[in-house]
Image (cartoon, rainbow, N blue to C red):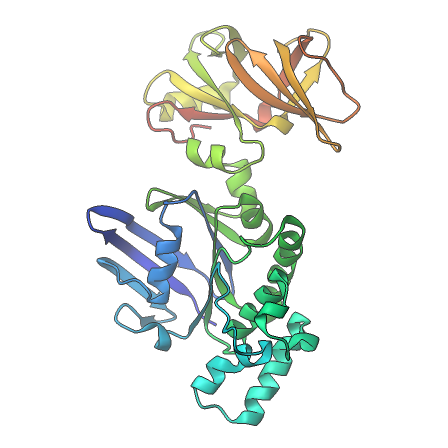
Length: 364
């Protein structure tokens, strides 16, 4: 396997810049996920690495080799697409064996590798069937087997689970992650689904408008988002955002929701704001699970009103009116309120986030 290094990658389609000065390093045997909305450049970046797109600028290395001018066939990569692209006239076993026959590998070695891959993917009993006789999950395994049988340096996967139903996607996420670790395979995986990214990736590169907003472990991206975009894109439900104004003085405070509510801040927050902020207006962020709800007022508790309740079985999700803002809070399922009830919320001070209103970068 090998490290993948991308330096100053730029790709344009006419006047549209799809990828802009992108820098990235995927370590040997790492599972790297590109996460972002449609049109952010994640698939284009993957296709540049594979050689299916020719970039206008930048350098791509696989191991120590610069591959910019190499064809996909000699880059020693294997790609799994959103659409399985199996040959309908061939059996599953023949589909898996096809890249080995293309290399004119001896027949006994081809059969040995196909059987080995089929055993890992648990599809030995499907090798004689045609693609039309297979379910979506089985076809996905065959497509994976066709990539695995070559034993490439790098696996590239472009939203391979998108066409599966929810239950099968969950099963395949676990299988892909285990498979990647068993093979010790360097893998670059593209998805718009944050659950896939969080559950599978060793690191996640969150992409926006052709660039990378943040690269980090799932924990880092979720708990320490570097920007307003990352904080809003990662998490279900999305992080709550409330306009805030900072007022310095003897008791520094953030005034939330157009000044309707005051939230005292400690010395760490005050110092970070003074050193990093471009002004005194911010976006305050807090995740729904980091808000405690009370039916009685108390110190540092902010009054609100229940707008709607969503019982989800394992948790209740409340939409709360905070001035003119609506924020979400999670509680245990036995905590019940009715629409219109008065409730007091208290954010966990160790889990609060603050983003500069101008730069949208994290202040704290």
